[in-house]
Length: 119
Image 1 (cartoon, helix red, strand yellow):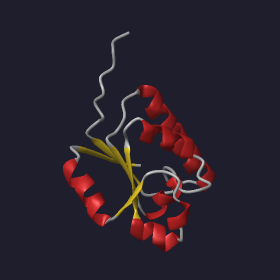
Image 2: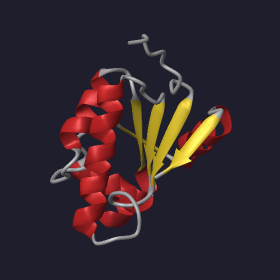
Image 3: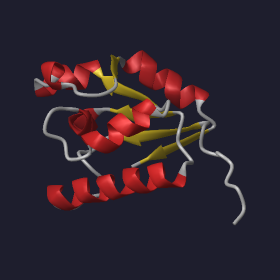
Image 4: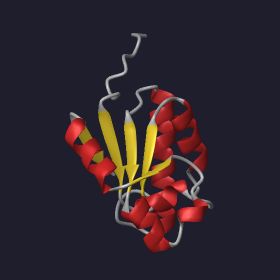
């Protein structure tokens, strides 16, 4: 087996939904959990994951993907949550992982990352 190189370190992932795709919420969160677990298993980690609109809910109390997000953060992946979105949904006090940022942080991520993947 060939040793895998980490090619995603310059990649930013965007979560704008409470999960992945346009489907019932349970399926969306299940897909997000599977995606994050496989990302961890691959060892090919993104530099940053940004959460805005309903995506911020993934990093808050009760999210089914908190374990994967905490592990990603412990491995050096930056997790940035939109402060305006957290305030809008009344979730500012329920953040469990990542750092709260603003639109400036989101803009910086989008402008600096050679590759951006929206999930």
